Image 1: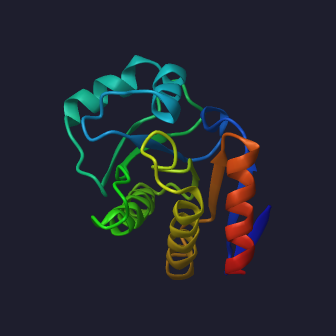
Image 2: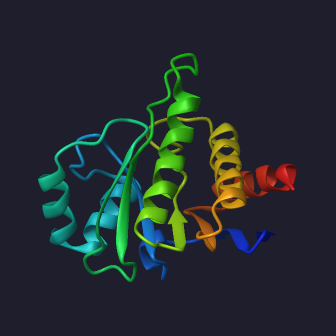
Length: 176
């Protein structure tokens, strides 16, 4: 599923983010940048040890922020490590932190001339964010950013399973 905004595209695909041929892949990282499970572990495994070496040199990234490393063995040029919030009921600023993680990732992409960016569903896995709300925040943030920043040509949400893809597709239809 794909839509156009100005000269940019926002696309949804089901697949493996580590196989994306884009300028930057966004990693759903933890604040210690120390690797982990899910998307984070898959990116570190596929990208090789240089990504972890760069993460160790950076050391830390607060929730709602993003940092950039090289992409190691991945087909992308960069990995943008975004730290989304752990969902704790929705009354502790989680929505603002999740929006900020996406927004900071897009800003990092712009700063690094990464015109094509692939995102996972940040915080929607083990961090427990309700999927429909997470999808809405992700898509609305991407829409708003590409409307104002024409340097981003493609924002592709690479969703691991069919259920996640279907929720993102439903939320995308509501926005267009």
